[in-house]
Image 1 (cartoon, rainbow, N blue to C red):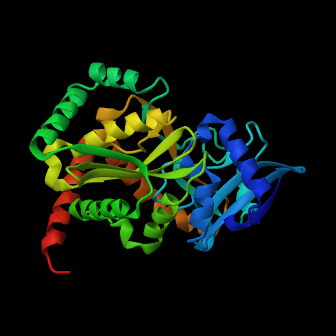
Image 2 (cartoon, rainbow, N blue to C red):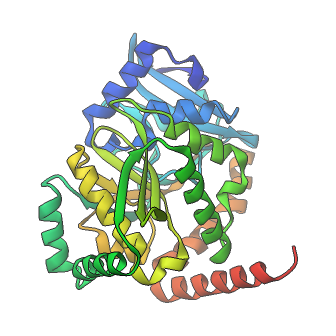
Image 3 (cartoon, rainbow, N blue to C red):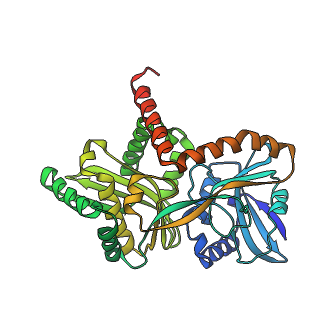
Length: 360
């Protein structure tokens, strides 16, 4: 095994083609966060992004996209934003993870959404479910599943759609639109949601706003940004921005206008999106790791992702362990316990309400 380190922009057409071929050869890699276009776009905005091109003799057997931070700390590309992480590699390739870290100049690689079958995964890594909407059999069988297994979710969402139309007017759905104006509306809703719930506003970082805008403008057969918006009487109601491969749509930024909350606009939008996505060839909508009520109502399957780190023996790896691992384990404990999770969520929402009324 030997490695060539390059900036994403330095990947040639043959290397991008090889990356895509390896990705499409293994269902575990069928996620747009693992696509070359995603890494290349982030690399245009973040100078810490690198790609290790892994060779076995003259043949490329893998690609390892990563961010290199101070002290040789490695993280996934766009860490904190992505719901699928890891290498894209030839199945059964002989890749030695600790040697790979050394060749990449890393002392540690930490991850929180590592997909299955990774050389980087530790045997004792913590595994978590990532809820999905499985559309491989089509939209109609999916809705039949919801009727049988998701309580009143499907019927009540249809009823609220009809009530919305009676109360306010025609409901219109735009799937995979390239218009920038609704994207900006969606991001403003998302910013309000972050502040309202006490979370950090991701869109306060200009590079994330620019990343989303560039991805919206990216459209190929194998990768594209997908903006979805539902309107009532011409007024934006709810929307979602994600990215897709040929067959997987990654759920990323859903949001809605809270003045319409009584109609469950998020559920209306997700069901409309699932129907259009299935019709366009999408087989899976990956909603991402994390417990959310709407995910529990809509899911009909799960993937597994893992959280952990792999490290070489070094002083910086020890410092990283002290700074990150205890906090990560405490967070995982809270997220895994419904009572602790609800308590923490309520505390964050209280903080969000206070932040909204206190002078900045």
